[in-house]
Length: 243
Image (cartoon, rainbow, N blue to C red; front, side):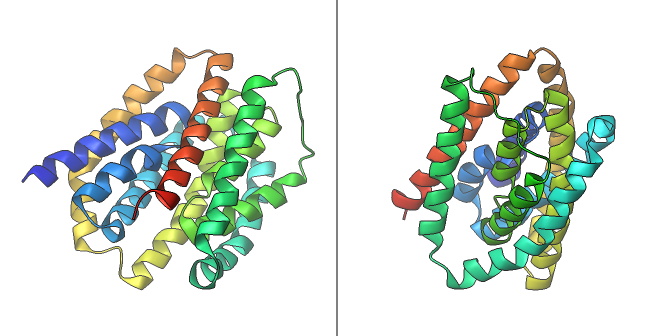
């Protein structure tokens, strides 16, 4: 019985982070979920939950999407996902993850403490960051950070962040879910926990939107940098300190 209570609460809090910042639900929720259920159950729960939130966010913020950039990110990701799956099977997972998380931390720290140095990437770099996101999504289900970093380097506004990320996440999550169905990971147990948590996810979506409206543009970007640092630090801890 406690599992049926704790999982919806955990997903509510993770969804609150996502609804406020446009990403980051898994960073909060996964460590707690894996204390209750196996990673093979927790991961598809988070994928379904993330897809639900991305659809809701897209419906609300579709006017803020730059479809030209989003299409480039998604197009490149489709080619990156199979490479990510290959790396997952044959590559040095910890080495790849270490480089990823250190890079995320350095980019966040640079933008946090050297705000006077503004970078505005050419739109063509969307292919590169989308491709990297596809690789990381296919390998480790962590497609978000490269896209967030691209948004930082493109100086997206808060609403551009929210909108563009969702367009990318929806396609990425759909591909991941298809893979989970084929592999048998997405099963009745996963669907049960997702279903009983859905009302809590919907409540978190509306509460998170209210919170975000009270956050200024500068505050939002600072919170994004801190969230990225948390992603990187948490990732390194999982690699080297958890067994």
